[in-house]
Amino acid sequence: MDDVDRMLLTELQQDATQAYAALGKTVGLSAGAAHERVRKLREQGVIRRTTVDVDPAAVGRGVMAFVLVEANSWMGDSPTKAALEALPEVVEAHVIAGPASLLVKVRTPTTEELQASLRRLYAIEGVTGTQTIVVLESFFERSVDARGDGSPAPPSPPAPSR
Image 1: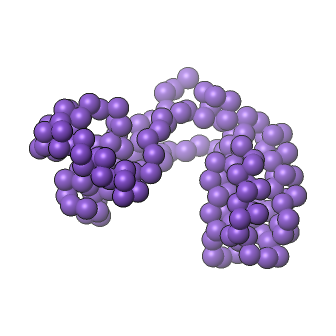
Image 2: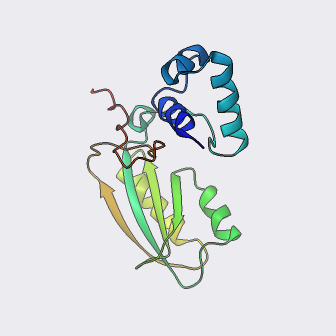
């Protein structure tokens, strides 16, 4: 991966709907060359997917919490992964080192639904406890810095105000 690939990734993270002509112009390539590089980045697994950034509150998922999941066994196996993936409110799950085995990000419509989600998490085999941190406000969420130069990546655009 070279500097042009990194610039392409930075541009795509800001707006993945750009035409290849505009994308190429921004990074100094033809539309065809930009398209070919993006295709190769997909094939190499650098670009894992192209998606839309949806405002969670606008679709009824305004409550966000991070849950530390304590366990009496290794939680990084397939049955645990499948059990977590079966819970639509779980939007991220990470095996971690530290005071817990997993860190799970949950989005629900209400705190009552968050409580129900915690019960479902607790019911997963091997789970012995949870510690939940409810997010009151998010200042920003940042994409991975594809430039690799150590400078801060620009934050994602703020959610529209209501």
